[in-house]
Image 1: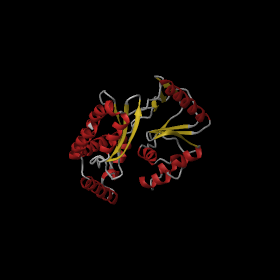
Image 2 (image 1 turned 180 degrees about the vertical axis):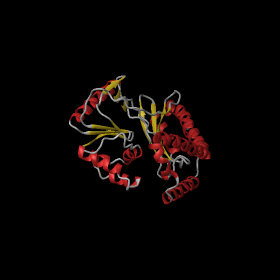
Image 3 (image 1 turned 90 degrees about the vertical axis):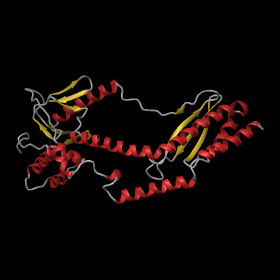
Image 4 (image 1 turned 90 degrees about the horizontal axis):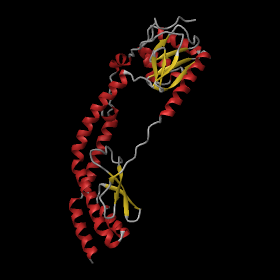
Length: 328
């Protein structure tokens, strides 16, 4: 009788603070309208371009300082960050995990000014976006956090008296009345604990009706609430980085000796290979003054190893005829 009266009382308290179905549906309808507007207008939302085309040439410029050694590999060629690196080539590993060619760092790749500016503007936009999202989501977050606290309190009260199965079942019935929550699953942990996998719609952060947020809420019998848990992947260990840099050094030296031209770009982690024939095709396009930059971007795109458009722009906007060899 005690637990039945307690549950009835708590249901009443829960329902007073829950979002009405009409309220949530109204927010979802607004999210759907905003989505339709952003898809119809490419200048809005996620579709908006951070960098204008007129700004690109200056932001693609890469300042390098190459040091031509007196001896080294004299076959093949290297294009680094849009610049042709003059032979002979000296490939060296520094600090175990960094790879340099003629004094230029190629691993890890150097970020371009374009990337740096995109990240800077993206950060500003995210801050503006989340500031707005925070103001919208705040009352709903407060309601859900209050709900989670109450789930913890109820579990602590009921679990010792009726067992965790009945306690979890009672909480499940209460929580499923909250219209922000889309899905909830229970799982028993240890001897007397229970975890809830909760998926919910959060106005402000859920930009479209099917954008959902989820987490794990662990309720501990007689102990404090652990709250949401998340996991993050471990980074690459030092040995793997060392092995990778050594592999790349050997790869570059072998390909140069086979007379390949190696393309190192800020925009492509793979080091693409150009056969001599394609290298001279690239140089012909770059030197053709009858072509506009847009024409050159398209022409270079016809060469398979230059599939990444930003890598093509990097070459075009950094082209200096004095750096490149004469056509053979």
